[in-house]
Length: 86
Image (cartoon, rainbow, N blue to C red; front, top):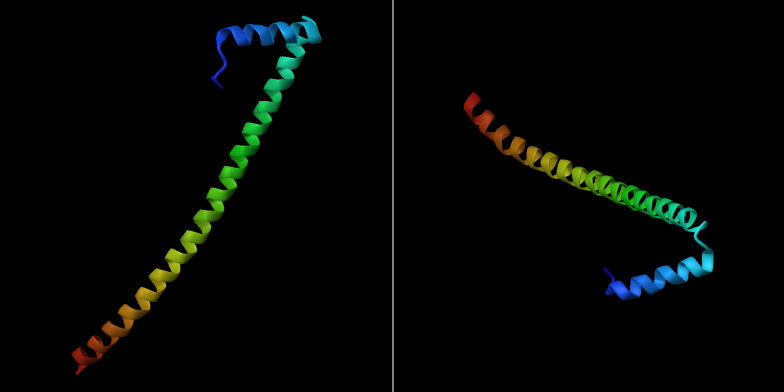
């Protein structure tokens, strides 16, 4: 995890206890957890918005292609239908 060994984690925890005191650590952990949750939710919202907008654009392009092909087929089959009516 981030290239930190067990001994380094212990030193960091000791520094946190000395700087903030044992009473403040749960409050700091809660604040950190809430901040991480907010960041994760914001990132998921952004991903969803990008995905939705990408789907809309690709769907429009696909629909345009289908309509174009449909018109071309109708042009070809229209002449065939006229020949059969004769």
